[in-house]
Length: 333
Image 1 (tube, rainbow, N blue to C red):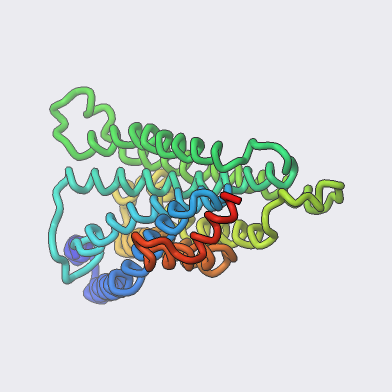
Image 2 (cartoon, one colour):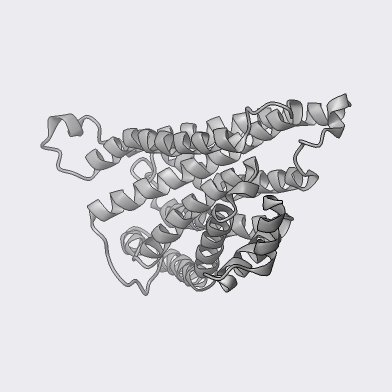
């Protein structure tokens, strides 16, 4: 690894072997992810999107947000093999990519992370609205679809400011405009604040409101329009999983922002550990692309029914199924 090459010039052979061990561990973990987690995540994300979009009538507000996160997960699944098969993550790398490819992968990764974090955040807030005001349409499926569209648009616009810093950090300093913006720490600070701090505060606020609602007993508690109780468990699990998997990555951004690593860190002894933890944290972030659909598959009671309905529909194909004919007859009569 490049880190070990630089590191070997400034320190002992024992430290160099430690750096090599870090590289070997990272290579093995990356290959395990590509062999196990990557195909599972891709299949389950595609399945989640297809099953829900084929049953649009029965989709609920949480389903729309999970479809949005699944689409972002598919983008992460496409980015993961390109990065994990490079020399940054594995010794047995398949290719080396240039700065243009690096910036493209970084922007796709940032957009996906923003979509996932803000979908989780707005799911928490809309769940509170649904619990507090079940008879309103503020958290309806129709509104949620438009909200998800704004999430993608906002993620692209938010990533644009970081894109300027990253691009200027990788091009020639002859351009006066970019020479003043060659500050990768500023781009990481933007992503840290917008991608993690804001969603974390919003989710915490939403959970405080939800807990307050759950403690209060109102006549609306028996309302039939309320969400299924299992949705609360799914919401709690999804928020916890997302923040557990994404927090290490954003903490490395915080370290890079505050300490200016690696340029600011004078002691080369910490460089291999820093890069190892940074790569490992990114692997955890990639893991959210398969952890979320698996959890949705296990905890959502209606998913199996929707999947069976889709399979019956595919089995019948062009010829109408008996249950569909009976349904049509009932509607006609």
